[in-house]
Amino acid sequence: MKKEIYIFIFLFCFAGLAVAGDMPVMDTVTSAPGITIETAVDRAEIYIGDLIKYRLTIIHDSNIILTPPPIGANLGAFDVKDYQTDETAKLEDGRIKIESRFTLTTFTTGDYIIPPIPIKFMLRDSTVKYLVSEPTPIKVKSLLAESADTADIRDIKGPIDFKAGRELYYYLGAGLLVAIGIASYLYWKYGKSKMQISEPVDLRKPWEIAFEALAILKEKNYPTDGQTKQFYIELTEIIRAYLGRIYVIPALDMTTEEFLGCIIEKDISEELYGRLKLFLNYSDLVKFAKLTPEAMKINSDFEEAVTIVETIRQTEMTKIAKPMAEFSRSNNGRQNV
Image: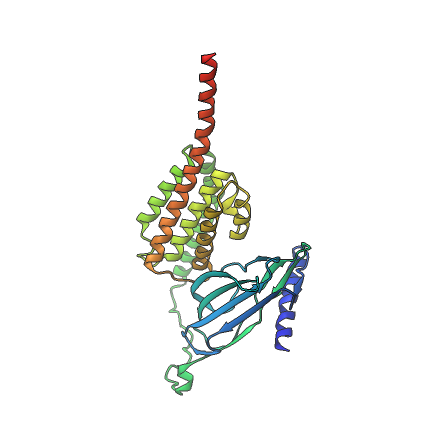
């Protein structure tokens, strides 16, 4: 009965979003032939800060086209501390098994739910549906409550009394803040627009711009200062901007899913596309799901970004060199005649 309630709430929310955005409602089902979803946790009760191993397993027939759930999918009140890349295996009966593993934690007590995750898939007749996973209840307990220690409970502090005779300073401070706000707005409206108009266009090759940006990012030492999230934000923006210049697409205005759907239609190898997808999906976990990677992983992701830039540079240089070689052979042929 609980499952039906959660699914009803999930459908109601998505239906409301669809109506608000004038979009069609998703065709969501609780079961479908040829595909199953299983969820599991290593324990249903934890204390604050404990780690939970959460596993999502999808098994489907080979004739079903599956879109895996986006990395950083809504996992409720839980923070993602670690994520293992989707493992795909072919079973003896020909079906395909995809398994994702998450390490979760939370720092607030109460009864929580790891919410259902919608899995998009396409049947042989091109019908698109969404299959919803089981919601998983988790109880988070407090060690303090069990030990009956109430030493942390304190009386509410009284209101702060401001000394008389300082009203003038308060008025001056408020007026100064208003003046700063107005000046900032005028600068943003007029000064910034003039700067944008006069800003020169960077005529360098896209890879020259990307390599310079990567070198500057490395010098900032964000991970050393504990700013890992900012490091991944700027790192992925460099790669997106680089590919946007190469393939002439608004890469910085797209979500990761939209960007990958657009880039796969370009002249890019399947192997490079797979590496780019893993790189961006893992970066989204750091940016949006509070994943904290180790120093070795941060360094390897930076080197992966450099490799992506260089691989595409070599591909583009080959494209440029090919017509030039053909033009040179054509001119030699005319001279011989």
